[in-house]
Length: 164
Image 1 (cartoon, rainbow, N blue to C red):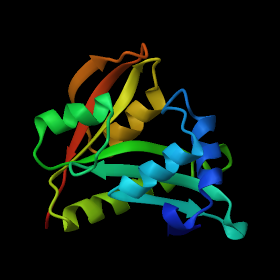
Image 2: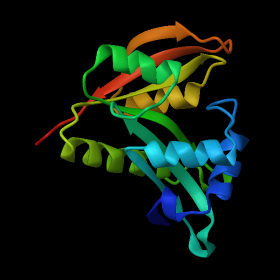
Image 3: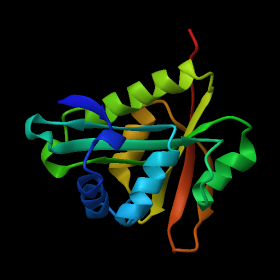
Image 4: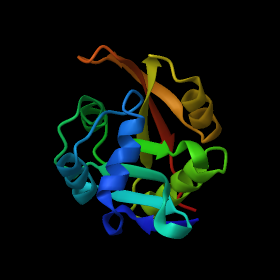
């Protein structure tokens, strides 16, 4: 698998993969996906031979003009941060370490840009135990919870970055 910029990918394919996991993230149209990728601090994914998308991650920093309750949580807490909006691995590519590799790459990019914190949210309701376990392994700690207008309850997580 090769790490690529999502802007260089078929965004219709990125959107299709995203929407297979809309319950865990949120449904996006192609124009919405394009807008998200354009404003992202980080938008990369892994593609296989034949350019089939295996996984992707989109993260925004505090400069993004993003209207989103979860992003707003971090904006209210931090002057500088990187917020992971979505990370998705295709079913055929699961258990290959792609999400871990995307997170590690994001941490390097964020630290190089002098960010000290990466934040995200994980659903409490509906529960997402696999994501809870993954984020614990990646060094994230809970910093808050919220009930969203769409009925989901989320846990907010942060990881402090090393600059060594």
